[in-house]
Length: 277
Length: 286
Figure 1 (cartoon, chains in turn brown, cyan):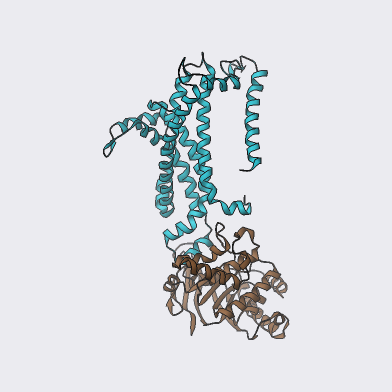
Figure 2 (cartoon, each protein chain N blue to C red):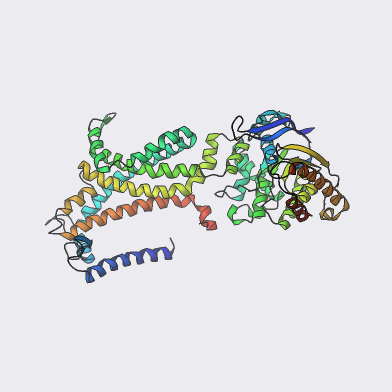
């Protein structure tokens, strides 16, 4: 079964004006149920725009988005997906538990069930002891875990994540990656995950979708087959092979880009690649 | 309240009294005049009575054989407090409503905000007799318009402004992420207002309410004076100041009352804020 289908989607901002920007051009993407798919690419390649289109936070200029067999708008109204951003975006006047309850509250779930579900989610992300704390009392990594718990609270079939670990330190990041995989496996949730980091994309994903900028489009899809992920996976040859594959795919897009006037210079790219490995 | 807060308040009062009495002790009785402009006030007993005299005056009868001054001032304050409360609540509600309308409709913000600001540039003294005049011809159903209603209207007129401006700012304060999250939860405008914008606005709302409280007191006091409403502290200040030369301490008793009134209103706002700021107290956010 398909969890998500994007077909022929284009997005033009400020259409018909002088500051018109073509953010996405003719994008097709299918995510099967239970799959973990990463979107990776340079800044401005439209990966966040694509995520927002799927979430129906913005509407495509052309093309269709289908989530769980429904048009994107219907899917949003039925809360068929959960979403998490780079900033946790917790409401600081609500306790951790009440933050997780928020989407349930808006769905009209009764108090007792809300509480039970929120506590179940907090157990899932390992924060059950912090239910009564306020967000400002938590570290960045813990806040992000609360945001994930909140995104999963309505048991959505699809999880959308926009660089959720981007603002965290490397150690926290790796720990949360492993946790996220466990959670997704446990709940059977399909995931679309936006990231800059090649190792992150490879470690998490069944498929890495490589994108390029101006206009944003999908240039390559790298299948990653590492079976069960553990900490050892990060040292395995298969992991490095996949990283190289993704890096090559990204380089291809970079090379194409640097021929354009004002494109970023190659040295900056290799520095980033070195830092990633 | 923490002992530290109480100590701070007591120290502030002591410092105020010390400043008053200190200047009175060392200052020139005729004040200081530079090039014909008086830059420091006179310090004689007519201009600056001793603090103790003012306090003592509170205990003495208003007129020979009348009620003690503190009783008269207290009753006047209570009367004005009622007027202020009505004006403050009406003004705050109106400001709140205005802020919500302006947040909801960008057109309303562009169209209304200049008027809101313009409204505060009209001199109060010019406005007050007008309000009283209009009020004379009005009635609320079977109830005829009362003098105090004009005064409340003036208080409300001053109070709504900080609330409208502060609340608008607060309603617009949530981050785009918060707004997108609400949208992703299929929450409409109303739910977003209640669950996100309103709670996010409280740090803006309460400072605005404190300003509005002070403005309502000023509005009530000035309104009483310029509409000639009897029974309130504003009227009392005017009445007592006619006796300024013969009984200077008496003027200050009325002023003390007006100042206390302001404090009571500020205290009421702080009390209302208390239950809504639990999260900020718990984590000691700025």
